[in-house]
Length: 160
Image 1 (cartoon, helix red, strand yellow):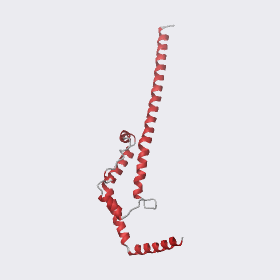
Image 2: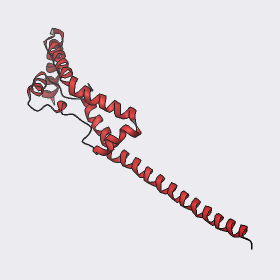
Image 3: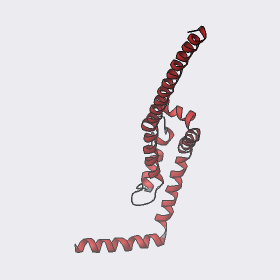
Image 4: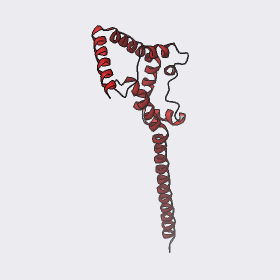
């Protein structure tokens, strides 16, 4: 056995060991990355989705939407604690939320835009809803429909 054979054997062993280490490093980094994205999903994106669903209810006008009234809106606007001025998605895992900027910059930017809009424009939105409700409540046609409904509802209720 010549020195060339010994050198090639050692070199082959070294390359085999190195490739094994590289494969293991790649597997571990992939496992850590997958775990990180699962953490982002579970501890950041899912709570944000829940918060967005709660926020959406303020903009739905249906039986399941908010129970708006002029007085309830005026009370909210006069309140010392205005939740919309403190609104933030950072109540979720702060580090993971900030990490969204690295992995999903468009989502992060969109969420920041929502936050800014809620903080700066939600009071204006409430005032517009209040004004709309006042117009509806003061409308003579609406009042006649409301009276007719009350009479019909009262008759149905009293007959049961």
